[in-house]
Image 1 (cartoon, rainbow, N blue to C red):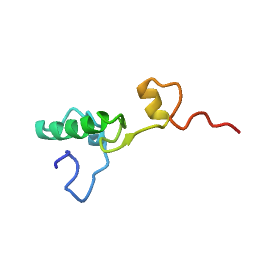
Image 2 (cartoon, rainbow, N blue to C red):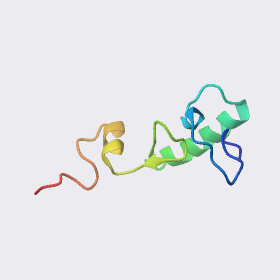
Image 3 (cartoon, rainbow, N blue to C red):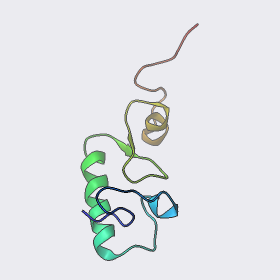
Length: 77
């Protein structure tokens, strides 16, 4: 699938990696929306800088989901 910055093997790391980067083709936008929606429907949250990176149960996930703690709870010494 075309995600706007890859050729199926190589990934170009730049601002086009942002999930909702505005300067992408309609097909790329549709492909990214499909990927993001599939993961978000399962409770994951998309990374703010990498459309292929998702979080679940960690601090980023907790913040995005409005949870008080990450799934693993509070780390105590």
